[in-house]
Length: 323
Image (cartoon, rainbow, N blue to C red; front, side, top):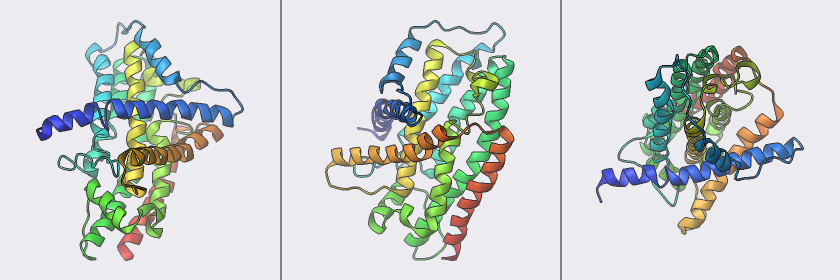
């Protein structure tokens, strides 16, 4: 089987596509259920994301008369495609090595903002003033949280690269090599020099997923869902699918960067272990945080991301430099 065909299968079936969607919807349903329990509510069933998507697929697609129709229709497709491709790059230790010949951390760094760009494109194309407000807020948030993400990736790449080069200055951006190095030398999440970077990544997660206290671009009580206000039916369902795929990508990337260890030679057990670690990251960085906090203003969120997680990631870079 050719490498191109194999890559397409990975993007459409495993670990991207069907598998990522299944896991992402499970995370979304469990997240809503646990948040409701923490707030002393019953909450929706675990299959609620599937029910929501099924209902949206039966609805009519309405396009505003003043909207830019090509951009309005292509925005959710653009976001979905980007995340389906990005999911195929995420390695599952003991099960799947990732598309090691086609990209590395830098490729993932460029693919991760695609859903945010799609959201901005759709909001600006809808001709709604609320969409324009959401566009500007999403753009500011993306500029804020992408900086600590880049620093976290650089810290990981430099530490692994220096170790593999025998102490010489080097950076290793291949996720396959990063995972392999950790399986031989221990998880980076337990390395004292990388604990600030781990904290920075945990802070990055709610910002990139657009959940409280950073759900500013879609604030229901302020700008009525912002960029998504004019969307409905299958187009809105596609945005929800993209969000579920992105949750799998960012949580799986966190596991690959900091805790990629396996527990046995059997791949089904390693697959469940990978999903469990993603689940723990979700509960710590998303569910608990959004159930206990209100919403930041856009200026507060921007200042927070350019100070706290950026400084934490910078600390790890300095520690890697001097150690």
